[in-house]
Length: 245
Image (cartoon, rainbow, N blue to C red; front, side, top):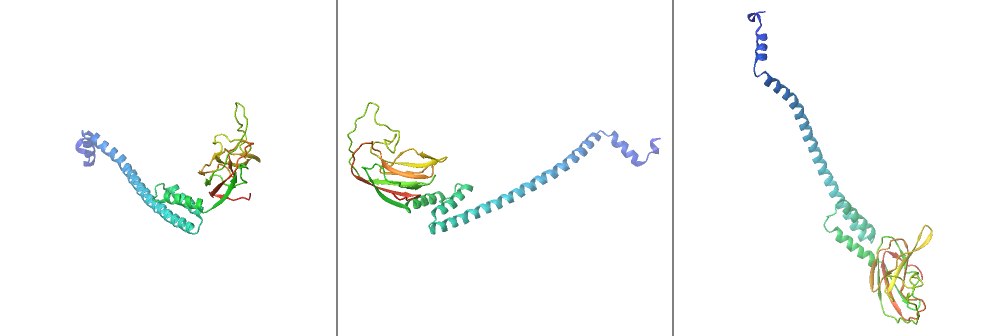
C-alpha cells in the first residue's frame, strides 16, 4: 500500500508511533491509570478519618455524661449516709479518667466519714494482757485505733541468756513490738484452719488495713508471769463490727 492510499486515521496512528514522545504518552497513560485508583484510596482514608473523629467526639460526650451522673449519684449516696457506695461511684469515675478535679479529695473525705461514723470504746486490764475480741474486721477495709492511759508494768521473771520466748503472741511476747506496748493481731481462718496474722503496734494511734477477714484482738505486749496493774482506754473506729466480750 502506498502512503497516498492510507486513510487520514491510519496516517495519524503512524505519526504517533514514530513520534519521539510516544514513550512519554504511554508513561502518562500508565501513570494516570495508577493515580486514579490511588486518589480513590486517599479519599476513602480521609473519609474514615472523619468517621473516627466523629466517634471520638461521641465517646468524649458519653464519658463526660457518665462522670456527671456518677458524681451526682455519689453525692446522693453520701447524703443518704451510705459512704461506701458513694466511694465506689467516685472510684468508677477515676477508672475512666484519673485527673477529674476534686474526686480524690472527696474520696479522702468519705474515708474519714466512714472511719468516724462507726466507733466503740472499751478498756484493757493490764493484769489480763488481752481484751476479749475487739471486733470483726474485713479484708482491705481500714480501721483506726486510739489509746490513752498508763499502767504499772510489774514483773519478777528470771530468764536465760536467750531471753524471753516470742513464739506465740497470745501467750508470750510478740516479736517486733516493744515490750509493754499496746498491740493488735487479726485471727482468721485459712483452708478451715486457724490463722494468726502478724502482730502490729498500736501505741497511741494507728490506722490499720487487715489482710484477711477475721477477729481483731487488742492487748498489751507483756511477758507471761507478769503482775502488772492498771487499765488503758481504747477507741476503735472504721469498718468493723463490735463483738461481745
